[in-house]
Each structure stands twice: as C-alpha cells, then as structure tokens.
Figure 1 (cartoon, one colour):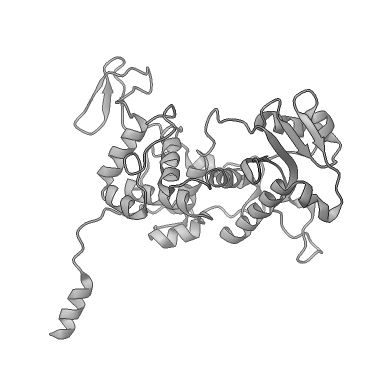
Figure 2: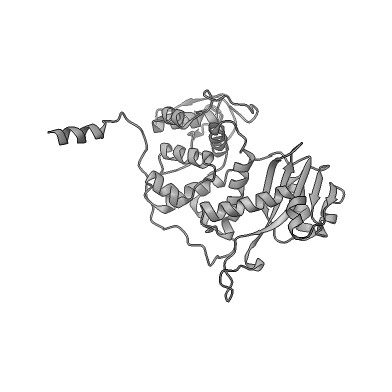
Length: 353
C-alpha cells in the first residue's frame, strides 16, 4: 500500500479494533513482516538505486541484485538500530495514534513497564518527528488565520502570572467547512507577528487564491497581498471568538491539551513537535476507524529517515526549564504474547489444597 492508494481497507490492510491489533501482532516477527509490507507493498525496492530485483538472505535482510547493497525492513527508518522490540514499538504506535488526547512519556513508561523514562520520551519524540507528510496538501477554500502565545513560565515577581515575552508565538490557520464546522488546521511557531513572518507562514500553509480571514492586525494586509482574498474583521474583546471561531477554538484546545496531558511541561525547543502531533490528531479526528490512524502513522514512520537521540536533545538555544531524560538506558522486554496459563486457576487450586 502506497500513498498512491489513499483508501486502504479495514480488516485487510490494518486492524480495526484493539482486539484485532492484539491478534495481528502477537510476535516481533509479525510486526516485522507488516512493517516490511508497509514499506515495500509491491515487493523489495533498493533504497540506494531503487531497483526492484533482489533476494532475501538467511538473516532476514535483502540484497539488491543491481548494486549489491544489503538492507532490512527497519534500516533507514525511525526503527533503524532500535534496541526496543517491535511489539513494544507497535503498542506505542497504536496508543499514540488512537488515544484522543495522546499520552505523556511518564504515562507510557507506566503503562508498558518500560525500563526508563528516557526510552519512553525518545520513542514518543521519534514518532512526533515523522508526522509531517512530505508534499502534504495546503489549506484551501476559506481559511481563518491568527496568532496565539503558548507556553512560558512564571516571571519573577509575578507569582501565578505569565508574560508574553516568556511565551512562544504560534501562528494558527484552520479551514472553514461548508455549511458549518472546520476542516484541517496548521500550527507553526513563528519568530514574530511581522509582515514577513506572517506571509511566510501563509505561503507555506495556505493555497494561493484562497480566502483568508483575519482580525484587524495591520501586517496581514501586506502578508496576503497578491496571493489571497483578504477579509479583515475588526473585533473588540468578547467578539473576537465570534468572528474567528475556528482559530480561537484550536488555540484553546491545544493549550488545554498541553496543560492536561503533558501537565504544561512542554519545553519551548520541542514545542514544534508537540504542535505537529496535535495537527496530526486534529486532521484525522473524523476518521471512521482508529486503525487507519495507526496505519498512517506506520506509513510515515517507514518512509522517514532515522531519528537519533542526539538529534532529539539538540536545541538551538539552552533552556532553563528543560530537564533532559536520564542518561541510563533500559532495553524493554518483548511484548510477544503466548498462550496464558491462567494464573488465577493456580491460585484457586493452591488455596483448595
């Protein structure tokens, strides 16, 4: 199944329920076979020369008949050189893709019994790193655009308060659906609310020729000039959410999500990854089947370059609030399922004896 086939079938190309998921992926070998199919649905394709002729070696890898390169289904993906069993990875992918509000690294560590917080933190960040599909379609039609401040810490001398200077400015855009409701959205960290920053954001997220609705912020005039039909709505206070309901709803929901699921502990340097996660989940909120989200996530992961731990912790500027994960690593045990021996019966028989 490739991106050229946009409608994979439930129950055939992906599990439809968590029960199906458990039945499909009982062993690491099941997960590896599925990952191989997601990556090469029509058969092996050499990642170096793109030749389609090759053979499987005794160790499970493939050798290209043209250039001789040897590779495996996990090589060159985010699962490259992973020490974590694929049954664990698949459980994380299912939880990440299907839970309405996502999950934190602490919750993941507790739920799956992972050996360290660092392992859970890195796995979730690797998944967040693959969520932007290359060449994804731009927003179109009628699009609302605005900015909001997210994050920050309490300023000295202002207990319980926050100042905009300590927060991150995020540009928000969302499609209006006809006759009501909202379509896809985008959330992007921007340097400032200048004409240059806003125009760059719009060009990267909104299809030229669309209608862009904004508030009365003056830079939007030049930011939309020549590219979009601009509708400028000037509102005061309580009326703002009525004129731009979409961006205000998304701004409120993403802030609530950060405060709820992640307890507000999202570092500024990693905020773009969390925003990508929210956009991924919002844009697929109407999917009829949870398994389709899982499939799309694996599809993105199988086509993404490896993401190393050092890439995840590298930031452009030091953060006073970020506490890096522990440096001790733990290798999670495989979650392969075997026939249960019904321990509750053993307890009953022991008590009876």
